[in-house]
Length: 96
Image (cartoon, rainbow, N blue to C red; front, top):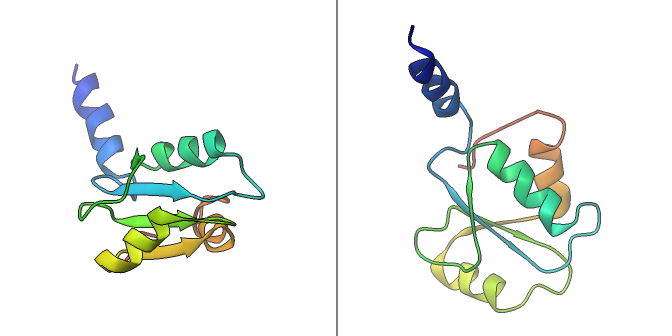
């Protein structure tokens, strides 16, 4: 039997595998734990700070220094509405 290989193959098919995402600001429709769980279920790593390795930042209301850092590093920033459109209803699309 090759159960571990099958599990590994399904993990590698997740759309955000290998990406690091950061949440910042106040999200209105999801709380931070829900947003983090959604990202992790799609294969993303969720970090607490922005770095050159960050793939995307989800910016809620009153986002602060993380948003500023993301812009300075040229990292893709999306708002909560776009995040939910892309991922909430299983319409997964990788970040470009």
